[in-house]
Image (cartoon, rainbow over all chains, first blue to last red; front, side, top):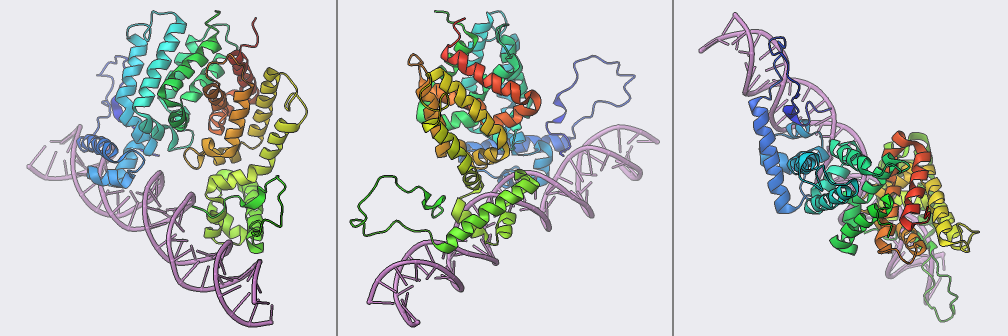
Length: 212
Length: 212
DNA sequence: CAGAGAATCGGACTAGAGTCCGCTTATGCC
DNA sequence: GGCATAAGCGGACTCTAGTCCGATTCTCTG
């Protein structure tokens, strides 16, 4: 198991009495931070140039000027590296959902928020399809373990109407056609528009919105 | 590319004038047939004993008494081997759909046939989850390329009501939560019953059956 | 039954993911 | 500044999927 995966950025928001806390928050060593940055930079550059698929972890380590061990200790595996690269973009979407303007953010009716989320998620997905695919599939079951999926799932489950029989399952089912694997397979056949509209329509009929 | 993948078992059902056909159907060589059978038998035994995940292609080749090259030439890759092992069971379901008794087979209303199919598919999936998962995920995009998926997809698309906006997409979306990956991830959390009922409910609301 | 030709065989080989552990180096303390 | 110590490093190593091609074996024909 890797030592840290994503570093000490998840500092607690709860204020503590520092005098009582003789152990200061475990700071990241300077060399570690430098290497983390070098790896992310090198990976981004290599992915941009050669495509996500055809870049090996060895190449990334070499380009970043670190050993393979360092790379894997930091990010766990290929899917962890992809997740780290997506972090910024993902966080932006999450913040827009939690505190941005409606209908994506709070304040609009649930059905509008659901549609806005799905629409925004399709944007995010299409924009980073290869990376997201790597983050979801390079390790079996990765998609369902990462924090982001749990966030999307909870958000969808909450937005479903109260009468929905099994909102937990239904939220999973609505997210299933948004897996990178599924979208990657369908994109050449259907194109982005049909995928986007199909997802929105599926959600509509699931929540029974348009009583016509 | 492998020489044959699944052998000459897909003989045409159309009667032909044998005298006009100077080239007899390419028979499978006796040693090839023997090896194919030995491989399938060895793989089934090893999978049953150690679980699908932890058996390597080397082990299978060794147990079957053939070289690795033979194994890969015959079945293409791990997902091809899994597909071959599933072939019988899969075919049975397909035949029940095409010519069996209703509601799975022809004769019942489309909505009943759809429900019957989904129910039967969940049975099939839960019964062979690991093998199906291997057949769908060991190669990227495998699920959507194999013939079986196309069959299920077409069947679902045909059963959707005429008013469905994009039946092609909708059929894909209904099948998405039935990927082995998705079900494997959800099974520990939700259990088989909620999965089965969730799928059926999703289909119902998609086709708008219960006007309630 | 012998010979030709093609299909098949099988193990050595490549390549990439992920692990391990002795060595190095940053950090906090004196 | 020097030292103790633990965090961090990195490359050699393992394990597995998948490829390649010279050697082998089968099948058909005469």
